[in-house]
Length: 97
Image 1 (cartoon, rainbow, N blue to C red):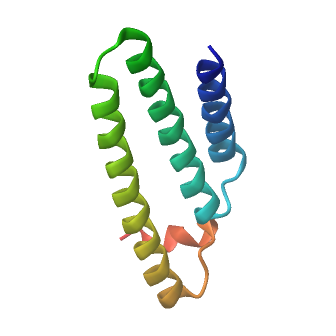
Image 2: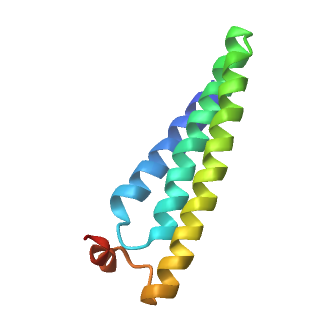
């Protein structure tokens, strides 16, 4: 039961971080990672309770997607910083065509 509470707390921290912090892209990316981590913990808890491997398989898939998302997001931020000199969200309206 403690895994369920831990997952809910991490999910709420991630969602609140996304909602409250709209100025720094790195912190927003970290909060998205927290949301994915919370779903992974919840799937692992479900897998342990129901004695199935589906939760563990989906957890591995989520971790793989999270790693790819993090790498691509950081690469985009590095290139954006090289072009604009800042990674502030307020300056990202220049990306619109």
